[in-house]
Length: 298
Image 1 (spheres, helix red, strand yellow):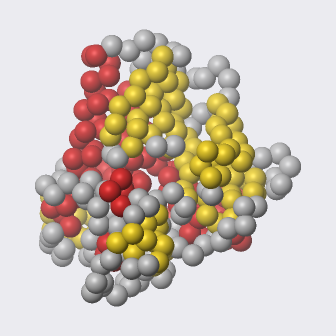
Image 2 (image 1 turned 180 degrees about the vertical axis):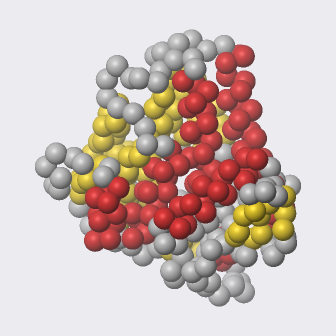
């Protein structure tokens, strides 16, 4: 397999493919990631998302890419009854996530005069398909779902060249027909150099959501990036790592985050409902392998 990698969206993009790729093959992939980062990053002041977040309550015409990502976000907001909710940016900022993660991860800092917690029970925006426009009711963050979206589109381009997989910060999407299953190691959320389990996929995607990796200390208390919209605070779920398979990278990202936020009982029920496979790790380090695994729970 040929290997290619580059930095984008504050992480490493890695491509493994059976065919050698040249500049004219790789350039569309680079451009696609650059486009989505410049469209959806809340840390780029003039990004489309940053501009949209400054126009709460106004009808704004958006790009085709933004409209497509917002359409997906709306679908999963409804599907999860609001557990997946991109309208948590105010709470993210209040918890200290005000800079790109590489600038705050593991750091300790103070922010006086923080906004109170905001409950996110309502739909954060409405879309007008005819006008290709959006009206925001609250500031939104599209980090995870935008990453899944761009991975899926990149996989479509790569499948025209050969078979393999693309790995973006641990979110993996297979393209083409692999000759054998892909065995993916799952890190311990307490020691990322230690592999605790694994998961196998022949097609589709896998993503991990964890509350233990993107962490920082704000005003003396540890924080993380997974906001529970039902409380407006960083999740206190007993599940600290959820690895989930799905047909697409967008679904894998949304499902993994939803399962973690739902917690042990409801998260496992969600996995069974989706008829997929998952590896969940709780606060005590106990591992649950369930869904469509043979033997189900271990």
